[in-house]
Image (cartoon, rainbow, N blue to C red; front, side):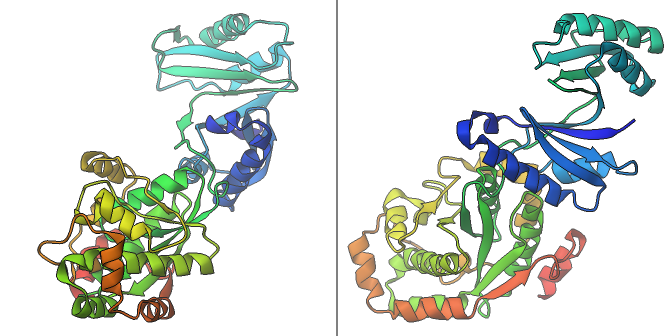
Length: 401
């Protein structure tokens, strides 16, 4: 029997006349993710996508690749029949499992209102056939197995289980952004969140070498590897920020250094964003979490650039951020020991309410344009697929890097 994968979405259905564009992007992303796994074709049907599978295609492998694709509400391993009740009954009886459950239910969705039987009538007919064939009991409230049937205008599909997807919008429908990625907990969650809103995203990391080890760069490589599973670019832009920080430290009043560092990062991030076709910067900042993330300081930092700074986590607390980091498998990497540039040349008592005027006056002691140019000219572009380390090797790498 020919096998398929049915993919359903939620938010895309609300997009009106733009909906076909969102559907096409989702299908393109799914086909790219399942390349080489025996997906013969993909097509759009009302309210869903359908992938046609080769006989030797592995549903398990396809599921593992697609269950992290943004835009998917759920997907299922499905079978197709013509618009004929007898054909549907025979196909369900042939395909229904015989083991690993004691009760079942039939759940019919009749998208084709011209089909002569109501949903409850199809449920009763197919349920009776399955009960006779398997000897299992019907349980409409809490079944061990649900046989889902979808009646469309030219065909019917049925399946026995469904896998929840991550929801959101397909990566690629909302433009391109540059994400400032530290080795910590927050920024990878911010990258995940902006990917979920349909943005293409590449990451920029600032490390403190040679004043500290490059352990934060190693962690960032591994973090990007995890985020690639959700659609992030596999390329990490790594900026040697230590020498720039040292120059700031020598010329800028101590209490203003952190904000000046952040403004310098934003300027370099904007330059890299413009080079790579990105329209905004993304950070993992959360309001009032640290001194640089107060409202006055956020405003002062943002005034340094002319493109938007998006902050997906601005109203999240640390518990929420940690919970999400664990869910997307970045937390264990983020908490590994390592030195990043945020810990370098940091004052004991940073200002929490800077003004643009006082910070610009302090920056007058610097050749800001020269620092930005140095940052962008010394950046290293890393393909994490080639320069990656396994999770089991992380600690030893961090100890010796």
